[in-house]
Image (tube, rainbow, N blue to C red; front, side, top):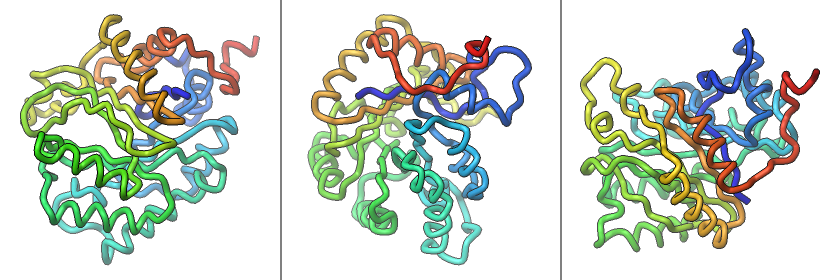
Amino acid sequence: MIIIGVTGWGDHDSLYAGNISPRDKLKEYAGHFPTVEVDSAFYAVQPKRNSSKWVKDTPESFQFIVKAYQGMTGHQRGEIPFESKEEMFEAFIGSLEPYIHSGKLAMVLFQFPPWFDCKKANVDYLRWCKEQMGDIPCALEFRHQSWFRPEFKESTLRFMREQGWIHSICDEPQAGEGSVPTVLETTHPDKVLVRFHGRNFHGWQKKNGDNWREVRYLYRYNEKELAEWALHLRQLEENCKNVFVVFNNNSGGDAADNAKQMIRLLDIEYQQLAPRQLDLF
């Protein structure tokens, strides 16, 4: 099954009609897509009251991809706001309980930074992370090209399979060491994740401007690009039970539109979506 959504639910204006309250946006979002990536978890370990509300706001079959907290992946420079790494992981895992108990946790996404390269210390840390997470399904996304260089590629994939990591496959600009190629390989029998970051090559390289994060994901996929990926997604589906797809190219408000285009290209009609406000009358 191919399960398509976008990153977050707050900024996709094309999905919401009228003056909808931010508190109600997830309910409306769930009428369009069956999954979402919770990126707010990256910036802070979320209180359980938040995830409990989000679970209640979505249909029974809805699935959440929760991004790992930045202290867990090394994005946060300096000291972490916890007594130890163990305490940090324990707090994060505790925040997942509402998703887990409701059966709505698709996976936790560990996205590592561009400076997390392929070396023994980092491989050891990945093992440690997986031990801390226990049976919780976890996806792994690299941002340093070294993991998929010819001399390391097969070892990286084998390691992911042996450790039970879900592969997070990226579509992104090829802009040096801080980007990874698209590697169409599954490493888990049940789940694979595909994330569309756009192809804004020049924006990807500009990291010093005040708005570089916005420029980085400023891209709209055209029909030809999506059609090529539709074939890739069908191929991945042959080797994996559930193919999760997340569009992250929303600097210009393009993610939701591209996600809907992909759904049409694949001729998917999702059942058990939430009722939309416009459909109530």
